[in-house]
Image (tube, rainbow, N blue to C red; front, top):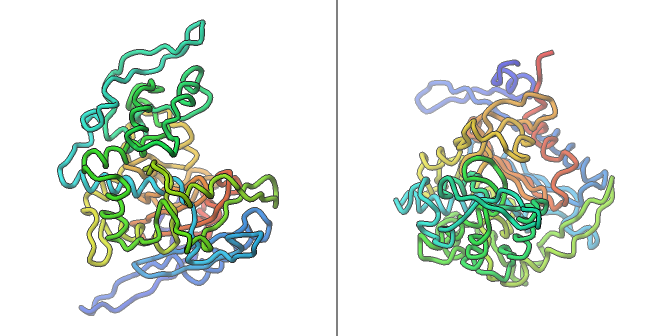
Length: 423
């Protein structure tokens, strides 16, 4: 495989420029998003709209602290011909998770907990858990004791073992009956219901997506003594001036709220009618793993804080070493069962981020730079932080099911240029 830096320079058609520094020495700057990249991105995103596979899409990219790309194509509301715009509000789903992780890690910096503390130390609902081993001949769930408690590190890297599927004999039925994620629950009620269920597997042995970040929100609430929604507002969103990142959209802003579309087939979109009220009514459950809405510029403020090592302008949210810890792979090689995480490419998982640990091995894999950290959302939204090039990107679209059309790979290829492989 060719050297990664060589490929960034030559296969991505990036430009080199020498700029005079104040001390009269020359600094070599590598520009990723140049005019050719901008044309690639425009062409790529507009093509997805023109084929009818998405209603609308927008993207914002910063490089070296400067905005280098913004554009929007198509419609936020296809039926009413409301254009996708810079201030369009979208459902970000799991892009809520990194914000929750950031809130949790502010308490870590204050010495309020250690990553290997049992979660039951702060949420006793999880003190007497067991682990699912199957069902007996009568369909009754069988369990065994925990090998060790679920830790805070487990819930930040998705190795806790909480069930989150509908196909686990016996256990899925218990999960359905308990309804821990019912939006009428408070976070404490969610914890009570979740804590009574057996874990699907022993903590630390597998990677499995699930309600771990909702448990993080409960931990923030318990450790800080402040309701989670209020804590994240006061310690993350308001300090970063993310005024339009919210669980509830007031009536005056709903004309900017994008509709979500379900792709039924090639060029066939159906408007979703189920999720809209999640954000236009006040609900007791302020989930840590989902539930926020945002705008491009708001979420870019969060991404810029991360690429700047925890600071944004004069606002310091996290220490640089904390951001580095969050962006460091936390999965041991012994964790071989990783659900669908390998579909993301050569990644491990840090604290609420996927972390790229190696270049792509096949042309089909997502493009990206080793050291980047990122996450996405169920409605096919995406963001990433590339600390090597000081580049941050936010891509907004409202599409179910999650990116079955290769939008994310195509967007990444357009930004960096297709990765080249040796014959």
